[in-house]
Image 1 (cartoon, rainbow, N blue to C red):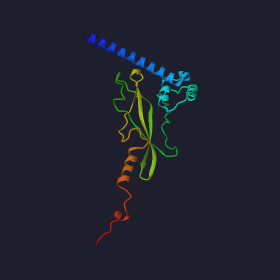
Image 2 (cartoon, rainbow, N blue to C red):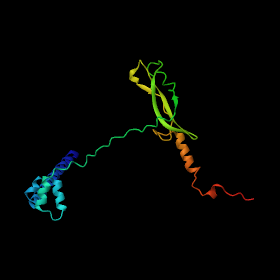
Image 3 (cartoon, rainbow, N blue to C red):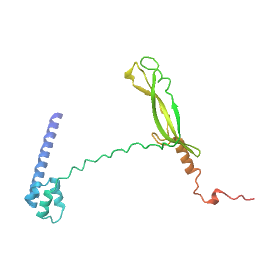
Image 4 (cartoon, rainbow, N blue to C red):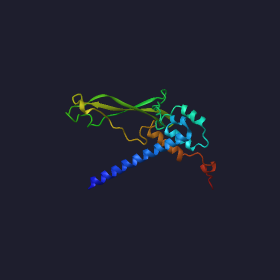
Length: 197
């Protein structure tokens, strides 16, 4: 019973699509008859635009038919990402090495000690009072030479206020404190209140 209703809906849908196609063809033929033989070269979208244009002449239709069709507007040119900015090389670097956890130092597959194969580096602009430097964070990367299918393990990153930011948490905290606590926009009389005797 359900399949019978489904077949009836499908046939109705197919009939409706055929009706729409017939009506679109009739409309195209009417537009061609209205705008002359030069309009046969135009696409349906170009003919539709001519409908909205008041007082279109055969010369304009002929000129439009000579133009190339525009590329589809749905294609958007994807801009290439400019890449991550680098911090100035002249700033001093302070390195901080984060060791892997004890679970990462032992292979979960065979129980052997994993081998240190390098570091994952990230840089953030950090600050000490009146001194800026680049904090280089090196996280250990370890691998088991026997269990290749286990892959490379890296030490977990400590939590950050803004993930993947070029500035450290200390710079963010200093900026917020400077903006709200040490605000210098108050009138002078508010900053240094008179002492009454």
